[in-house]
Image (cartoon, rainbow, N blue to C red):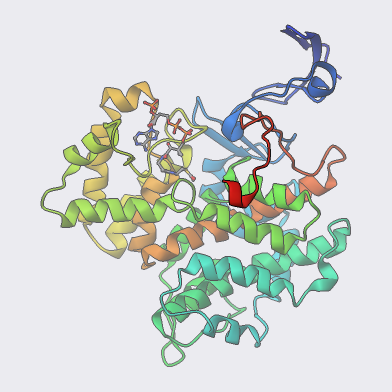
Length: 430
Ligand code: ACO
């Protein structure tokens, strides 16, 4: 228990607020007794000042531009680990030993296949279906094969659901893509690594195997790690909100995917590419005019890939990717005019007082889309790739929530501003 406390003074009286101490970062003022004691609620749209939980998973220092998982710097994890190693760290708390990693990797590999009946599920979507819609629907759909694992308070059941989700997500994602281009579904290959197997299912054909470029596999591994977790972001908060009703892990993760899809969150990587493509294609658009539109208070347009609720400095994930973008592009597609436009845009925005005053820096989505594109992924798959990366974070948060004795069903309050009471008027008299 902390010795520190806050005192809230209101016209209804004072309240002593215990302090929830962090290991680092912001401390929390415990306002759980506020409404019952003083009759007030707090008003905090978007929960920008509200901690919904204690968490030991991920620390983000937005002012300094730092990100650490379980205490490890994102730069070290991205530079040295496999994605499954980072998933293990998030889920179990420590980096695995070689033996633990081997066992964990083998366990994941044994669950990569989808039930054959799921093929008809993919077939039912129109060719034009957005792969994010297929991804979240299929995540709900595969849960119907595992009803015995629904119980959130059974750790074995949760462990089995988690393994199946991580193992099957690349298969679902690749099949969603194959469906959209009318190619046959490619089955997983358990002799390949997690990332190689995903590339194989995405780009191989039954008539022609795929030679996997190690540069591409390495880049994808780094990209997945950079997306693995990020505190209480919109999709993770959604996973927790749905899970707080004791909905099963599959249903909670599917809801998180839908939250991720929006252009202000995971959909931004697709929006960045569309914005850059527009600058390249439209003779009337250039870097200066796009920046001017983003600054115009009467224009709802925003510079996609810029700004972040938490980072008021360069997003450390974007920093890793900025360096990486050159290497990958050189190997895969040579000089890319889109990367040049992106860099010009970044230079202009970083030196413009509008962006400086508001502390708007490039976020992870600014460069991820350019690299995903160079690796051969179509823009509509970008948010799907983000979802595969974020999956361990969603699961780890969901587990942390179900194991936390302080968890209550998510049910925020409101400040009601509608009519107080009105006389009912029958339909024929209105
Ligand atoms: N372009 C132009 N202006 C911007 C941008 C932008 N990308 N982002 C924020 N602003 C401006 C706002 O208009 C506002 O200006 P004002 O004070 O004059 O009204 C100010 O900066 C603060 O913006 P908010 O909307 O209050 O910031 P918030 O924290 O709510 O939003 C968000 C963060 C949603 C990421 C926002 O910066 C944005 O829309 N960015 C573009 C979309 C994007 O890249 N999303 C990816 C986020 S990262 C991720 O999900 C992995």
